[in-house]
Amino acid sequence: MCIVVAEIGDGEGDNLVRALHRRGLPRVVVLARRAHDAEILSLLAGGVRGAVVGETDAMPALLPPAREPVAQRPEVSEREIEVLRRVADGHSNRQIGAELGLSALTVKSHLARISRKLGTGDRAQLVAIAIRAGLLD
Image 1 (cartoon, one colour):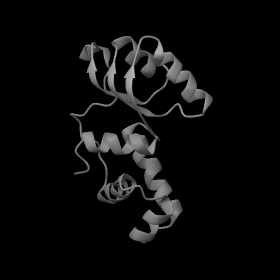
Image 2 (cartoon, rainbow, N blue to C red; image 1 turned 45 degrees about the vertical axis):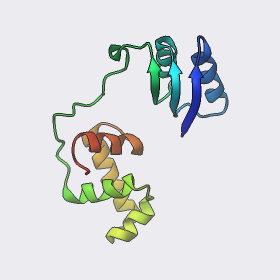
Image 3 (cartoon, rainbow, N blue to C red; image 1 turned 30 degrees about the horizontal axis):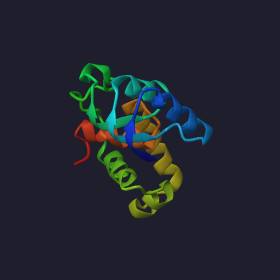
């Protein structure tokens, strides 16, 4: 989920994180026109998946580094890439299976194998890592 706000002022990062947690929405990306560096760090420390800010006093070094090395291309089979492409398009395991002539359980097995190779079980992160690694164009 994506939350759009005009500005995140002093102390508002913590308030936003608490409000998201109360609503059961800690895994969001926040888009803001302006934010202070402390508020960006507060959002990220509070579990927000990411923050995109137009104007900030944050230095790039304050942003968390990527978890996976982009220079290495993971060993992913062509079939696994086909599955990843469909995940990137937002398809369910059942839909992917129907398109590729597989059962939903086989698709789930492919995703588990891809998850081990890329180091995450989150579908969105799988796609992000695959794109950064050059597996999906």
